[in-house]
Figure (cartoon, rainbow, N blue to C red):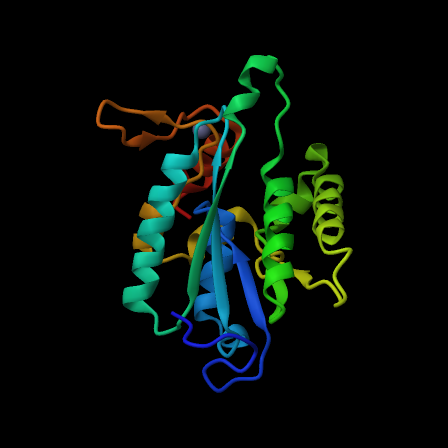
Length: 224
Ligand SMILES: [Zn+2]
């Protein structure tokens, strides 16, 4: 864990990176790069997980993945980090009978902005944008990313300092290539399904039907 506040942590003057970490494949790819790449080795690192409770019921599955993945890095990679978490719960929207609830990306941007408002040493916010996202034009990913960055900047609009910059450490990689880059133990721990089922022991199981399940099945079966 980080021992001091501010930019000069562990004898380095490099700015702090905030990693918004869900336990999914994309953000795990980001975290793996931040933990292992020489490019980021002297940057103090804050890892933040948001427990997002909504009708997709993914929070428990993600929390389990986050715990296992951080345990792996704590034991196997000699890089210190500060871990923090928060809770965002929209289950109370249910009586509205609406299909619409906040996008994870928007929630992430809002929380990231508030963390940056309280930690002036953060200059970069690492997000899990991939080449697969960029190639999937039909999902309007750019529009959603631009809106999220608008939310992030909006939260910080009353601060005196310049807002931190979003960085995308795995933007040149497809989801399959990210998967291929991960250690086996991390692959076993990470979570991807949008709408998990929980068995009688409350263990999460992928639904096998959602878009991410179908996508992951393609490259897992291809032996990537
Ligand atoms: Zn699924």
